[in-house]
Image 1 (cartoon, rainbow, N blue to C red):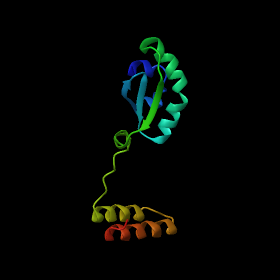
Image 2: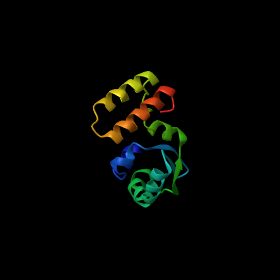
Image 3: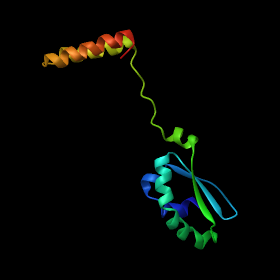
Image 4: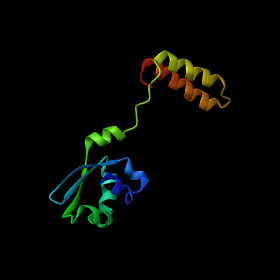
Length: 118
């Protein structure tokens, strides 16, 4: 079924949904976000016409938002530098800046990094 849907669903959505189940002519798809779910809902008539020749008459295609998929799709958190390393990197950056206001702002960020607020 996933392969049949791949012919209908755009590539940018394909990685953000899965087939949850099919019972009594109702297919349930799980989407990784409400935005993906909305786009899939717009494709329901096309999905039905594509799947019915293979799977028989379909009563409905339902779309649900799945927290599990949303977590899987979320970008990985970037590791943060330890405060002293962040401060040192920002101070080094500030040394190479000619613009006084920019240098002052970067040094202010360096102080915040040292205190763990940056």
